[in-house]
Structures are given as structure tokens and as C-alpha cells.
Image (cartoon, rainbow, N blue to C red; front, side):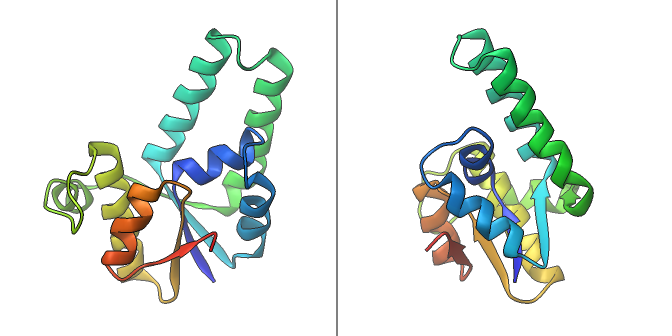
Length: 141
């Protein structure tokens, strides 16, 4: 199974949220994981914001960063190339779609053209609903 891992799912795993263990098992079971450069930026911003707000302490922050650094060498990071950005600006089946969600959906579609049997790993119902309407399979089930 090949995954496109969207930010919401990765954050659940990194920060110990609901379904975090299930997300981790899904990531570990995949033969290949793609994610977006956008995901890495979003993860950094969430960690910085939560630490500034006192929701994460220094140890939790370090652990989240360590976990991500451990898996990134095995993952393929998709850059926000013009084709992805262009698709992100177009209509999606279930509008309205937020800008960053549109870029994730466009990236997942891009990955689906590169590889067979791509599943979208997301815990965001807005992303999942559009992905399914576009013909992508979503995890966790």
C-alpha cells in the first residue's frame, strides 16, 4: 500500500491524539509514504504554536521532532510544484475548500498519477470527503 500522508493524521501520531496509534500502524505498514512540503511546514507551525501556548513542553516538543526526523528519510516529500499549485486553485467536488486543504488534495491527486494503489491518510473529514469524491481511498477506515 502506498500512502499520501496529510498533516492532520501525522499530527495525531506525533502529538498522541485520538487515533494516533492507528495512524502510526498505518504509516509503518505502508510500502511507501508520500507527504507534502506543506505538511512539514504545517507540523513545524503547530509544534511552535503549541509550545508557545504551553500545550507542549520542551520534552514533548523534542519527542515529536525526533519521531518525525526518524521517519523522514524513508518518506518521499513532494514539493509544491506549479502543477500542484494550479490544481489547488481549481474547483473540488465539495466546496468550499480551504487553501491548504486544496493543496493537500492536489498533491494526493499528483501522487495518485505517479503510483498505483494510493491511499490518503487523513483525519480531516473535509479533506477525506473531497478525496473520496475524487476517487481516492482514505485511511484510517
